[in-house]
Length: 222
Image (cartoon, rainbow, N blue to C red; front, side, top):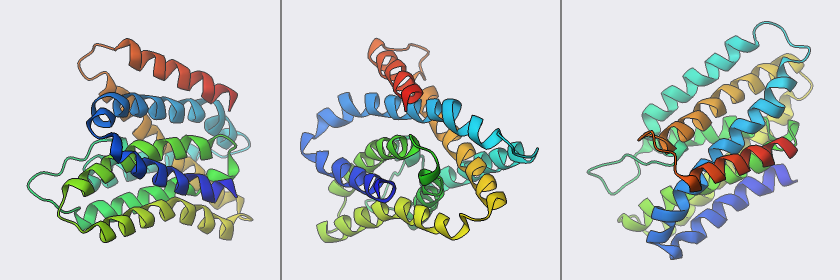
């Protein structure tokens, strides 16, 4: 049940933090991004990679690279919102391509949640900064509040939808292994991009370092 509920609740919590305003954007959001990226990376290293390579064939690497390529394509359409940045200029509406690519990303990452114990928590935390960025944009746009609320609800349902779709192939191990490897590729790209961007000026701040190390430790125990 938590596989379906936690990612959706994370979107609701992320949207509800708007009242904190500029503090969220300038202080909390960069730390949350670093923490979520490091947590995803640690889960990949400690749980996902060892599991999918166990008793798997040599095509695992191919599917991981396919996931990375898929995320590269999705980010070219989503303007980088998966790693906490929304590069949309000259418009006050969310582009349709952004909504479609973000939905695909969410469905893909939801596919493996029920198979790895810590991934539901990691993806749910990853949802928080993404939702905050989208909610900030919606609040500043001319989009009506009712439509903004509906968009956020639909976004929150995409990851549970991916988890639901995975139930139809749970008895096909070959498809599951390939899909899990693609998820690793997608999350590997997202998590490393977040960490690289948190150190874009080659000066790692102590707060970011604490957030990253804390996430690594938590990921180990998850």
